[in-house]
Length: 316
Image (cartoon, rainbow, N blue to C red; front, side, top):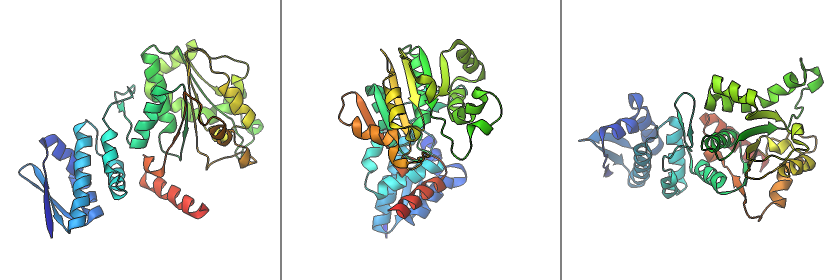
């Protein structure tokens, strides 16, 4: 039987570590099959030697994260324990707690995984970034947050969000309303992200002034986009011609982020995805970066991670 003590700086960190009704510490105890108690403001871990060592690494990492102002959720516990299991706990020090921007409700948008942190840094450092990964990794939401940050810092004058209106099981012609009504369902996730960042009043004002533009990809043809932050979402559903057309819209003092999940291609011929081709074609070009998320970066419900792993295993 082994026993180790982890020092805790203050009562707030200790409270965050244990969680509401000791929910967080209960998950750690179950994960490593150890007993964890609070003694004189510190944390004592008791169990077999290997389990205690792994639990100590997880607890220390979680205390560092909470010490930087981040809330320890179930997803955070799950992520940290998986990183420890793979021997990547040192990478967790990259999570410095810095926020990207603030939502209209006052919530600070922060990268919640190392993969998300590196994605944000690549967007800072490159003119064009391709973010590729499974659902729930924050590809689009963080890109929108970076666009809002650039706008608030007066680095760009316009935010443009677009995605291909691919007919996945439904024909556009059978949807009710005019063309805008028909394409709105495809653009709804982009509206939701911007609405969250700006709030109802500012969002409506910026839309009316043309500062924010949310449109189908086809509307980009023939334009040159200067001083804009442009996001192409669901890019796995673009053709080679569409993504080339989009990339060549880049104007002066603009940035582009292209996001997509190459495991969810809705095109009749998945092999002709413009995103898949673009990754190959653009490799090695200076100021263009490709970031790949993994299932570890999923920040939705635990089952989303499990579903992604199950499908990867099945296809392999």
